[in-house]
Structures are given as C-alpha cells and as structure tokens.
Image 1 (cartoon, helix red, strand yellow):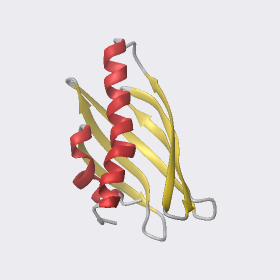
Image 2 (tube, one colour; image 1 turned 30 degrees about the horizontal axis):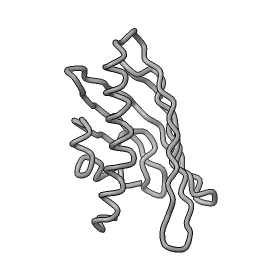
Image 3 (spheres, helix red, strand yellow; image 1 turned 120 degrees about the vertical axis):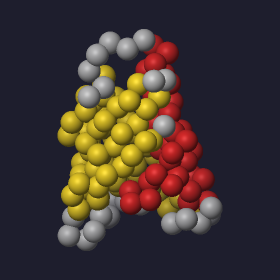
Length: 127
C-alpha cells in the first residue's frame, strides 16, 4: 500500500490531493484524507486502512465524507504461479441524491483507479 505516492499513479482518476493524517507504528498509513473530483463534483473522504498481512488483505472504510458517506471495501491479493490476482470489493453510499450518470461516472473512476491505475503502476515497476 503505497499511499505516500498515490498521487503519482492515480491523478487521472480525478484524485486532487492525498494527506496521510495518522500512521501505524510500522509506518503504513492508517488515516488518510482524499480529495477527488469528477464532473464538477469535489468529494472529501477521511479513510481508515487496516492491513491483514497473513490473509494478504488491505481493507478500508470511510470515517467521514461529504458526498460519499459510505466508501468501504478491500483489496485481496492471491499469489499464484505466474503472478498475483487482485480482488477488489467496494460498497458506495451517497449522502444526497445524485443523477444516475454522476453515480456511474464516480463509480467508474474509482474502479479504474483502484484496479487499472494500480495494475499499470505495478507493471511499470514502481513498487
């Protein structure tokens, strides 16, 4: 989980700023403030991250958010011969009624960043 360099690989997904607010003793991010924008809608979320090294899982949940009240999920990593499979789970909930096109655009940007930008970042050898 390279949240310190998140902006370098996810800017195209609409990410505007990332601020690590609190770290675990091992240096990994625990609480992070994200500001992202899509279709003229800026969103701020403070997220909590948890790491289960034994199960190869990074989970997250929103501690607070202005547009997205629920932003919970996880990454599951399964190593196998020839590579690693990443499973991404996501639960979104919005605090106000948004048009369907806006929900689809926001959800799509999150998924593209969460998986597509991560894949490119890893394949380019940045980790």
